[in-house]
Each structure stands twice: as structure tokens, then as C-alpha cells.
Image 1 (tube, rainbow, N blue to C red):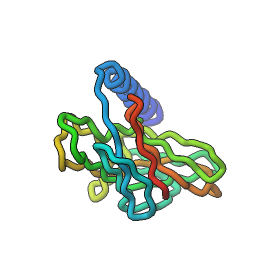
Image 2: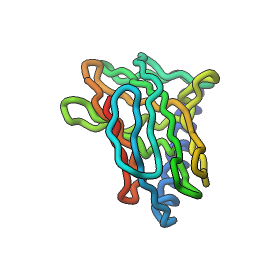
Image 3: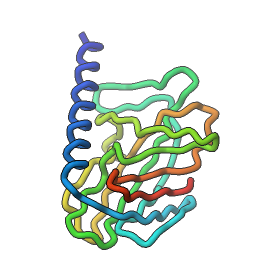
Image 4: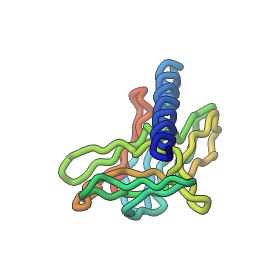
Length: 168
């Protein structure tokens, strides 16, 4: 019964995120991004800064009552990230599907979309709509990558032709 319930939760979460992605891509919203990262960075003059506050690896993701383990030979890279609206009115920030991780071998990994990632002391990244300049969104994002992979870049992309890449 528990396994069935977990699959239903995952299916529902993926469905909701896909619908949100469709809504965002059809609304005509645009943003530009700048990256700032204490661990290394690249930047452009734009409306958002991306800061990686911390990074760690783990053999499982835990949230409410569910723990998830990666495929054999993989691990989770967990990044605590802050997005800052620098100068855009009515900017939506923090959608999980806007993040991708690139490793030194050139492979790209999507953010692990699981709404139960994060803990009370380090909550998962959650979208915030209609932010104004100076507002921030902070949270954890996770990527399932091979244990021997070397992460090199975090990309934040609004899927409207604007994006930012932060070097790790």
C-alpha cells in the first residue's frame, strides 16, 4: 500500500509541475539573469542573481515520510541556492524545472523534481510569483548524478531565451 501511495504522490507532483511549466511558457513572461556565486561565478547584466550558498552530497533524499535513494552508482548533489530579483517588477522565481547541472564530461542533469526534498531547517526551493526588486527566494535543489561525476556549472533558465550559468 505504501509503495502505491508513494507512486501516486510522485505522479501527481510531476503532473502539477508539467502544468505549471506549460502555464509559464505560454504567459509571455520574460526575464534576464545574472549569476553570483561565492564558489565561483560568471555574470551578465540582467535582472536576477543566482548564489550557491552551500553544496553537499547524500545517498538519499528525505522529506516528510518518504526517503528516496538514487540508482546504484549515483548520489544526490544538494545545493542551497538563493535567487535575488535585482531589477525586474512582477518576476516569477524559484521554479525547480528551471535548473540544470552540467558535469566536467559535458553531461547535463535536470533538477530532481520531488516536492518533499528539503527539511524544516533547509527547505526545498519553492516558486515565488510576482517578486519585486530586492526580493529573494532561497531553498535546496537536488540533482541525481554519478558518484564519480565532477559538477562544473549550474544553469538557471526561464525558457524564454534568458538564462544564467554559474560555475561551481
